[in-house]
Structures are given as structure tokens and as C-alpha cells.
Amino acid sequence: MTEPQLTPSSKNPFARFLAALGPAIITASVVLGPGSIFTNSKTGAVFGYQMVWFLTVAVLLMIAMTALSTRLGVLMKGTIGDEVAERAGRPFAVLVGVTIFLIASCFQFSNNLGVLAGVEPFYDGDSKVIPISILIAINGTALAALFFARNLYGYVEKLMKILIGLMVVGFVGNLIIVQPNILEILKGFIPSFPAGSEDYLLPRKEMVDNKLTVVDNLGAVLGMFATTFSIAAAYYQSYLVQQKGWTIKDYRTSIIDTLAGIGMLGVISLVIMCTASAAFHGKVDPSTLDSAGAFASQLKPTFGVWAKYLFCGGIFAGAISSFLVNSLIGGAMLSDGCGLGGKMEDKWVRIFTSVALLMGFSIAVFMTSGGEKPTGLIIFAQGATVIGGPLVAGVLIWLATRPDLKANISNKLIAFASLGLIVTLLVAFRKAIGIYLTLTT
Image 1: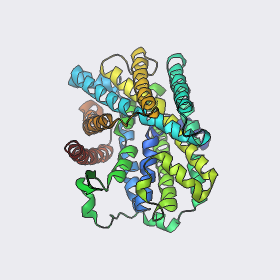
Image 2: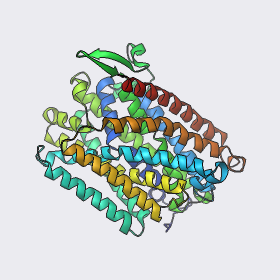
Image 3: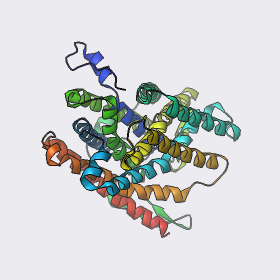
Image 4: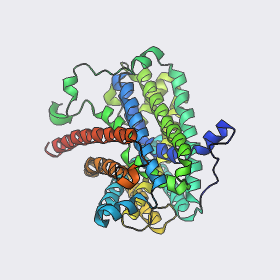
């Protein structure tokens, strides 16, 4: 099931670079979903280029956590689920698997809606039949690939490379159209905070239009950070490395893969933020930009129909790229946590992945048919991430500090990943406050 690899001694650097691309490209593709596109756009629209430095921090932490997961993947004999079960007991491994599965399943509906946002310019917005038919076709294709593709990993890797390419074309095309201020972008790399930063520290209750509402002025920025520094995606990297067949001998290749894949994530995210900043900051009321599709629609009157098509193409590629892999993360984590295997081709991985796919599809069809937004489900998913993010990051660092593994992992990498755990705990604490305020409003 493994693929032939070019060794580090290959003479052609570009060929070696292309051969190294694989696991981290898949990891980046699941991170670059509709949620990431929306939060990066929203951050640019609200704060301009001021939060470029914060995005950079998120990318650096993602590189560190992904590199740590990669290192564990090439060092361990079994999967992370096997290691956790052996060292901490099967119940704890099941807890980790169930938590990630719930997060992936709850947020899968946003990938379905992202697909519709990407194709919205091509059909009548009042139609119910067309979007539901599109969802049936996309989910049906994903299920067919899941159960009938012989080398599912190879299929997913090739598809993700194509979709990442489409995102680059779509979003860079818009960046060329809007022509952002290069000097302001460079200034954005210098850490700074919005005026009146005290209003951004914690979410709070306020009266808005005579209605008590939870206001979070930093919500978009933290959403951008959380969707870029995705602990679950970094965690899954160890599985992808093992699926690829890499061992400790391929570690140099795996580092090239991590830097290239997550670096690509950072570049595309920066392009999206800068495009939104140039197009909307100080020009459009950010409250009207409440979805990725809304950003695409707003581009049309300002920059012409092609800008809208390019942006929608990027949304579509982003939604599709994270569509199957997001479900695979949930399915693989649950299956492996239960001791049923963690490879894409394993029976229970496919079964649990299909459950995640069908859950997301059902919720999206309900909403497309006129149903209300599943607020309770969103709050539940947010609650799961409050537990899941720190839990998964903690597991990676805990494994990396086991004596038999730590000997082959640098202290600097562990320290940098530990910083990521601290930041994750702070973000989770703040999110928990927001959930509490929402439930008590």
C-alpha cells in the first residue's frame, strides 16, 4: 500500500520536493475548509492587515505540532491509538477517539454548505432541488470513493494536491484584482492590538437592538487562529505518515513535507485575509459579511463577476478538500481509539467515516430545505472542541516525553509544541466563557 519514494539524495531538488508533498498537503487541505476561508475573510474585513502577525503565529504553532506528530508517526511501531491504549489504557484511547469523532461529525455540515456556496453563482438561489441534488452527488461520490477505491490514501493525496492548486488559482486571482497595499501587509507582521483592546479580552453580554446578546469582538480572530492551528488535523498527521509508509529514514523528507504543506496553508490564508482587507476593510459593514458566500457575493459589484467566480471556486475547492478528510479524521480516530484499526482501508474506519459524512449531509439538507440553523449542535461542537483541543495536544506532548520516544525528539520541538498547548488552553478557556454566556442568555 505504500508508494515509492525519492530519497534525500535525489539530484533534482524540485522532483524531491514534489515527492515529499503528501501527508501535510492532506493536513493543510482539511484545515483550509469553509470555516477557515470565512474567518480569515472576516478578520481581514474587520481588522485590515493588523492581524497578519497573529495568523503567522498560528501557522508557526501548526508547523511545530504537525512536525511533532510526524516525528511520532515515524518513531512509533503502532498508531497513536495503539500507543495511548498500551500506556494509558483502552478507555482513555476511546475517550480521545470519541471526542475527535464528535467534533468532526458536528462540523461536517459546514463543509456541505461550503460546497453550495462555491457553486451558488451557477444556479438560481431560490431553488431547493438543485442544491440538494448537488449534496447528494458530492456525498455519494465521497462514499463510493471511501468503499471502492483500492488505494484510498493515494486517491486522497492526488485529489488534495489538485484542490490546493485550485484554491491557489482562485484566491491569488482575487488578490491580483484587488491589489493590496504591500507596505501595510508588511506592517501587519509587527504585533499590535486593536484600539480599545480591553473590549476584546473576553466575550460579554450586551443589549443589541433591545435584545440581550453575547458580543465577542475577537470572535473572528480567534476563529481564524483555531481553524489555522487545528490540533485534530495535526494529530492525524501521524496516521498519514504511517499510511504513506515513511519510517525514521524518511524523516528529512517528512520535514520538507510539513514545511511545504503547512507553509502552503499559511500562504493561502494570508492571501484570503489580504484580499478581504483590501476589498472590505473600511468600505463594507462587516456585520453584512456573515458567511463565506456573502464575501463572494460582495465581490461581484466591486470587482466584477470574475472575482466572484474566482472566490467561489476557492470556496468550492476548500470545501471539497476538507470534505472527505474531515470525516476520515473522525472515523479513523474513533476506530483506532476502539482498537479497530486506523488505516483508511480498514473496515471500521470506512464505516465510521461514512457515519460522519451522512450526519453532515443530513443536517445540511435540513437547513437547505428551510430548517433552522442547528444552534444546539453548534454549541455542542464548540463544547467538544473546548475539551478536545487541549486533550489531543496534551496526548501528543505526553507521548513525545515518554523516555523511549523522547530520545529521538528534540527538546526545542517539544517546547514549541508545548507553547501551542498553552495557547490552546487559553483559547479553550475563552471559548468556554462564550458558551456559558450563550447558554445563560
